[in-house]
Amino acid sequence: MIDALDETFDREEASSIVNVLIRNLKTIPGGCLSIAVSSRPEVDILTAFNGYVPLKIECEEKSNKEDLGKFIEARLKAYDMDEKCQNEAARILQEKAAGMFLYAKYFFEQLDTIAEEAQLALGDIKGLPDGGLDGYYEATFRRIFGGKEQAHFRSKFEGHPLKRALQVLVAVQRDLTLWELSKIVEAKDMKDVVETLQPLGGVLKMPPRADRLNELVQLNHKSVRDWLVDDTEEKKNPSTGKWHDFHLDLKGAHTTVVTFLWTKWLPLYLKMLPLEGKLGDTAANTKLYEGNGLKTGAQTLLAYA
Image 1 (spheres, rainbow, N blue to C red):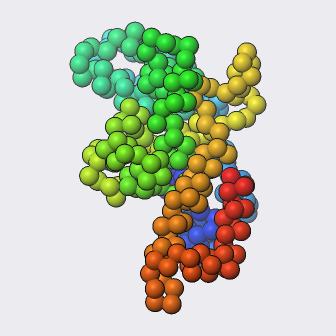
Image 2 (tube, one colour; image 1 turned 135 degrees about the horizontal axis):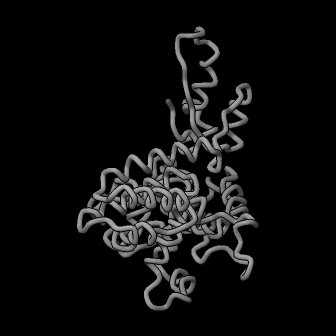
Image 3 (spheres, rainbow, N blue to C red; image 1 turned 90 degrees about the vertical axis):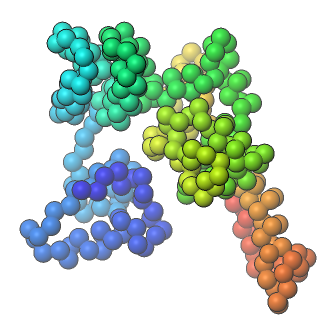
């Protein structure tokens, strides 16, 4: 079973799981091996496997909701609740999850924390955010940027260093180490980055300490990125004509990353590039760099971003 193929798909990498499967599946003798692959219906993956008929599982499908209901009922049995409360809790959770198992995973993590400190009550379950994953992510961000000024989430987010870090994380093509992220966001030090990101521990994987500079900083799931940059018309707030208060402009996010590479990383690289046995000959290296047409390519990339 290969789960969440869309999380690791790389169309350019010949050794990627997708390309290995495509090359070898038809050479396996019938009946010897069965492979099940799960993924969201992304165009690249559907195109790669166009010789196969996928089984689609939609959130609103009856079978999916039944499976989710069984999962919720089984997990609720771990809590000290009477049968009537368990049945009502299952109904509420099923409605809030909107057919999404990942949301169920998130809210049971919250309920486990509550149950460690006190007996779980229906009020705790009713207090969980509505709207599936989108609702969960929005509630998480509102908790960070809320406080007493509930009407000013966007203004708080705009000026917060957390926004710049998130812009980088949604734009990069691979996961960054803590050290790399600290350089791109131009943080004072790595401790500063860790402290900035800590409030998002529920949707972010990150090193617990600043001295782990080579550990990766990652969004917990691709759906976090999708929620942050989703600009589809149906997700707009009809009353304001805008997306949620924490929406990130993907073009602006790419510009942030490319601007850093162009203005900070490239000059450093040119200083270190050996040319005719010399290190640090910036003028000569720049000439070589421009002569190879790399400057034009990078400027095009910046314009595109």
